[in-house]
Image (cartoon, rainbow, N blue to C red; front, side, top):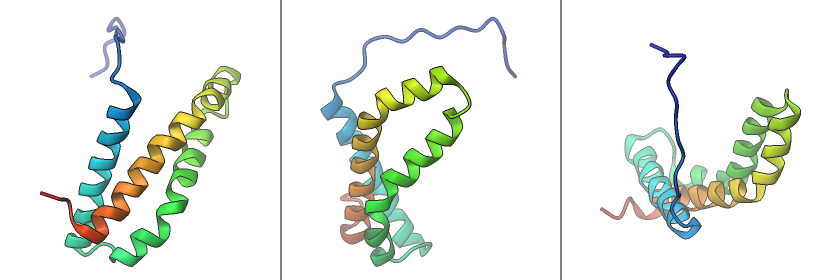
Length: 102
């Protein structure tokens, strides 16, 4: 249930290196799980990995395209978005090839 009076406060974040490492680790687990679960072959995940950041960025861009402010924030954040999406895609490919590492 939505509460209109609810608020959220943002505090300090983690360093970019830590966030990227988390994205890589989560992608690795996801890629390993996809292969283990039979939803994708490892070669498919590895082959698609370079396109993943672009596809994710395109999806996000479509969501914010309606507002000028949203577009501007997206453009400013895009390099960081692509870096983190690349960390995810790399982890997914690594996990597909090597497993989750656990």
